[in-house]
Amino acid sequence: MPAPITEEQTRLDRDVLLDAAERLFYERGIQAVGMDGIRAASGLPLKRIYRLFATKEDLVVAVLKRRDRRWRDSLAAHVEQLPDPRERVLAVFDWLAEWFAEPGFRGCVWVNAHGELGPSSEAVLAEVRSHKQAFRDQIAEWVHAAGASAADPVFLLAEGAIVTAGITGDPAPARHARAAVATLLGAP
Image (cartoon, helix red, strand yellow):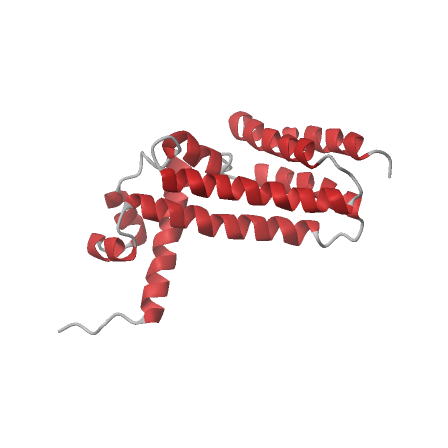
């Protein structure tokens, strides 16, 4: 009889699976990636994968949740290192420019997931909306700390830059959005 799988092994398998699925979904698209592809990339048997996530939709949602935490934590770490509230808001766009310039940048994983599955998956749609609301709330906090009331325009400029950079493959939209936000915030 095989030894029972430990909690540590389950955690390690889950991380390997999420890493493989995230990479494949981002590179190729969710619908273009089958469970056999995820099995091959993760090195885990399908039986094990389905014990960890009963459905592909469950796996997609877990990938989105984990990426949300990492993405927003990275953004916050970059922004909050600056003491000046106005510079913090502008730093959002500096961080976006760095992200857009990364090799393999393929746009916003949540917009991509919404485009593929949002209309047909309530769970994916809920996760996409949760991420976008959390991002908007994060921006609003920084904008209000800078003494401005332009949270929604700043959020829309960030979102527009993300989508445009994803389509064009050019990080320039972050600079253009940053300049517009600097105007919205007024002179320092």
